[in-house]
Image (tube, rainbow, N blue to C red):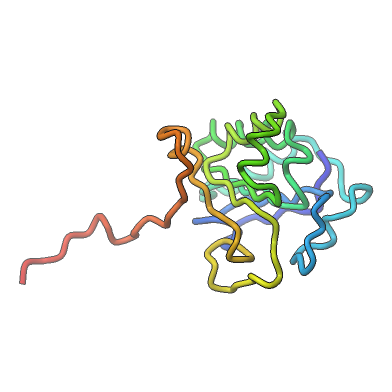
Length: 175
């Protein structure tokens, strides 16, 4: 697997403390991309899934794995293998892509479908500079969607992810 970098304990690539893998190579090359160094397919560092698992599991407080880019779906088989291990270890998997969910489903590539199957939340769509927003939770631009793939698989209808209410388990005292 070819990567640009990893970040341990990211808090911007999904909820909680996340191990983020930035894959190397991206066909989208979105103008204004925050990570243009990941576009070139000929650069980056070759690593094994096992190496990444070892790094990912160094912090016992890690809540999840985030696959970003570059474009994770250009290395879908390797990303799916890493995502499956993360899920076996109880971690939530988020995957960022410049493709739309519908494009990936329509294409039906087995490796890409395996990565979708191992992903809990898909952040889809290209980064659009004219829709850039610092207020778009876990996204760079407003057009990108946070798709709850577990709910989507369960209901058969595309379901957007929403942040859980951190205070939902508290009850208000009677006044």
